Length: 112
Image (cartoon, rainbow, N blue to C red; front, side, top):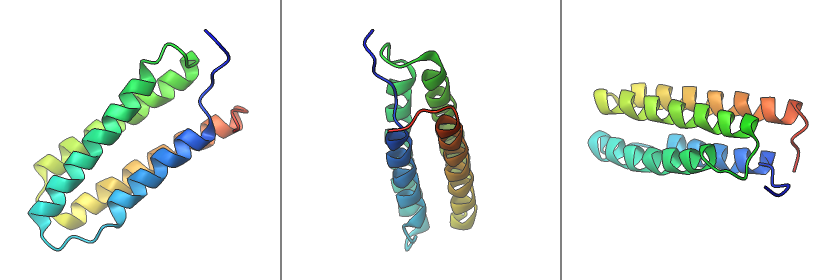
């Protein structure tokens, strides 16, 4: 199925998107929460599509699956939380998890 491999650039772009969500300052906690959920849903969809891609190696699909799971868990936690501080903590945890998975990909020699 071709030589297509996920690049660490894909992980970095995904990480930038998670950081962007986290960096937005909440003025209206409910509005912030709703926007975060919409954006996290988009991220989860992007990760899911990579996780099921027949063009990616199994190890990459597994990493994207783990990211999709983490994003869904974060979104679920935010749905249960009304505290913007707690939301930011969960988004920070997600960013850390994506960074860990990106480091794993780079360590296994999957460079751009």
